[in-house]
Amino acid sequence: MQKKRYRVRIIIPAVIVLTALVVILNIFLSLKFSALNNALIDEKLAANINSLKLYLDNSKANSRMAAVSMALNPNAIKAIRDRNTNELLNLFTPTHDLYRVNFYTICDNEGIVLVRTHEPEHFGDSVLNQQNIKNALTGKTTTYFETGTAVKVSVRTGSPVYDTDGTLIGVISAGIRFDSDSTVKELKRLFNSEVTVFSGNTRIATTITKNGQSIAGSTLDPKIAEIVIENKQGYFGDAEILDEKYKTFYMPLINAHGEAFATFFLGIPKAEIIAVSNKSIRDGIILSLCGLAVSAALLFLIVSSINEPAAKSLGGMDHIADGNLRKLLTAINIMAVEHEKDRSDHSLNIEEFEGDYKTLAQGVLKIASTGMTDQVTGIPNRRHFNNRMNWEWKRAMRDNVPISILIIDIDNFKTYNDSFGHQQGDLVLQMVAKTVAQSIKRSTDFVARWGGDEFIVLLPVTCSTGAGIVSERIRTEIEKVLLPFVKDLSVTASIGVHTQIPTFDKTAEDFISIADRALYLAKESGRNRVVFAETAQ
Image (tube, rainbow, N blue to C red):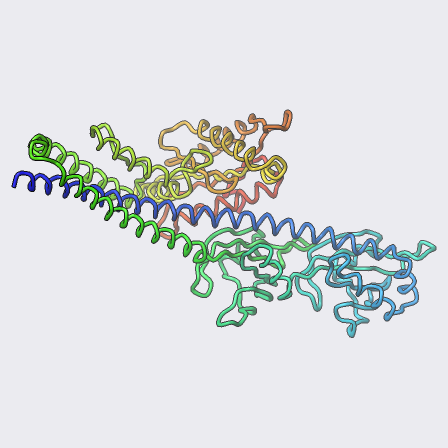
């Protein structure tokens, strides 16, 4: 009876400990996978944004090369002089693929269309409303994002055409259109994300479908339209389209008159990556339960072999084991509750435990901290920041005090990363993270990696003056960091700053979005500078 009683008293606590470990591990793995999901989506979207900008730059270059090359073509010059429209079509149509352009518009020296390769049946109208053609008639070759009669969203280059005696006889405008289904489908294949092109606030080409039908013709969300079209700023954030959640980026196209006449949309469905992650979590849970069953069976066999004297010697240790187990489970439960309250800085006090329980507590703490730490820089990650931000936002709202936020972006980081590789790029990220962390002085201030080459700083109970001092200190300290492998060249950073007293009609996400707009303006206005959202609006 004594032996059986001690077998039970050893097996039951051990099974409880193993079960608790499995549950804890899976909870923290779920949190870690959730953070990883967000990081993966952010990194993928950031890469797609850079690819889109590169695509647009290449489109400008191809458009210019096509227009200039054809304007110097003797056969094209002769056909324009002779107003031979058939010859113009024969000359220009085969060159579409050669120069990677979609269309040409050829007009005379008064801006009257002689022929359009994309609409050869329509000609004789004036295109002086197109700035690239208007400039070309003054002898300038210029490239702009523009709209036209048939093609609503495109990049076009107008190049003057001179006769052999130097007389201006016409203009060749070469264009690449973005408003076609074939274009957005090709971009979807390249970027592996959904693509939409808006003319004004109307979708005119999109890869998003409902019941197999394109949703072209629907309109842009008014709030996003205000940011992108009216304020001419990029918008990065979450959106719900046709009941599906996306991580999105909207980028305005600015025409020659400084107007945002069109918008590019990139969207990554969150469900795709989350589904893969959830499967991994489910598989992990199943494997953990199988491991638990095997461990319990082995434990039973081992305990069954314990003889009576050994069982008696263990009797005096039962109350110690039970006490440590209860203490550990209580501490874990408290930590889980605090994390649910967005108190992610709460952790176990491992000094309260001894022996194997101390080792177990250290393991739990390590798992918890891993889910909250950026693996490259060693500073808190985006999930950790969001928890802290929500908590500080609620506290500032309750106390009616200001809160400030800084979003920091390393200038020209992609170029350096592409030139010297990801390892050197990671080294720069680590150096900047360390510099930013050392530049904040108060224990309540908080710095985290926001994603890609961006960092974010939270300054509780800080007015705009204090935020300006801290942001300028960070900017100048980053300037002192020298780029590895590039002699005497320092790192620079652009910083967007926003200060606000939280109110019930605004969310922390709105607050961050405003700071992000300020960062965008800092990048657009020359980089290596601090821009306040209050002055940017």
